[in-house]
Length: 240
Length: 106
Image (cartoon, rainbow over all chains, first blue to last red; front, side):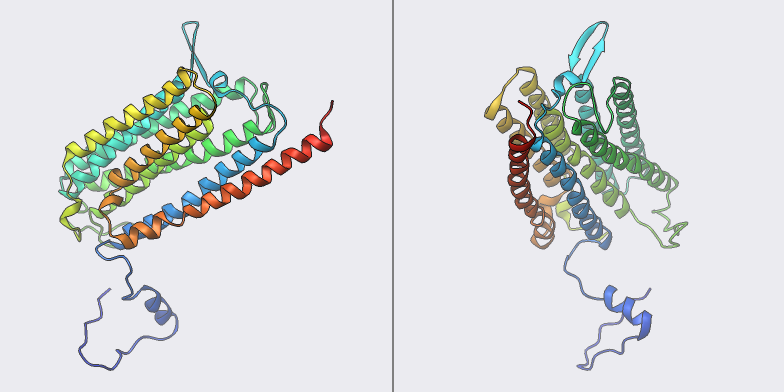
């Protein structure tokens, strides 16, 4: 696509009609966010909408928890890890939290290397981030398995209010899905960075457009958001 | 890339924030481990949560270095969620009241 040449004349430049005009009008020279690549503005707006989705989940959890007359299960007794006969409350959740924070740290450094167009370091740090993310999903699968074997279901559990299972599986499940999608995209983009697609302006397979290192930052925003959501789930669901 | 130089942050800043996130998460666990209850527990949990969220959005997501137009466009709308929280707290309080009043088995 070519940018329309700036014109000094007062008359408005001719604009295309029909569907082309429709697309052009919505995508043309109106810019609210200066100095921000469009991908970054768009991912921020996507994250805002995702914020609302997670907010609604946490709100429904608050609503069912506040309105039930049955006691809510004690999370430090539900989420317990037994190692060698000793019980450690919330230990698994602690491990998951530290794994996710570490992945956010490596992602931040990957973005930093991306700015400097350091191909090898960027790709390596993204793979490390993906590995942390996959470990997180693995621990979550273990957590789910343990709870399901103990009899937690979306409609009931052995310890208290029935809504506990529904809230738990929905919230952590949706978050885990986000992590999984993040891991997949991290690996895809890491591969492209590693191959040097963004250094030699190779065209993308699906979009046939030239990519650049901005995608690393865009993906980084998504990844940090996943970590951010975990901060809220951890505080409001596991600790409250 | 179309970035201003404000985005080129030293690696050290990330490491410091990373360290703080570890410390704050540990503090959150200590709240549970030391068995704080009631308002102190809720206050500390929310405090650590907000500070961690601020560090992630501000530094890791670079929001602190963005222009105000973007900052407000993204950070102001979630404030509406707080109103939603208030409405639903009121509503669930009422639901709880009706359940106790009409369905409670003495």
